[in-house]
Image (cartoon, rainbow, N blue to C red; front, top):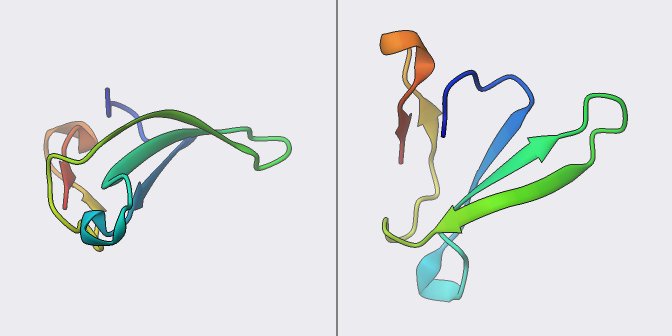
Length: 62
């Protein structure tokens, strides 16, 4: 779920180097601590991520 990106972090990493691909994490607003929510390696080497401006920011582009 992308939805409202407030309180979420999306992290891209190189799958060719053993990374998880795209990882979604919850951000604790008080401490800044990240809690991994899940990841996918469906997109190879997603080193650049952007949340879509249209449709209420419900798309993540890699």
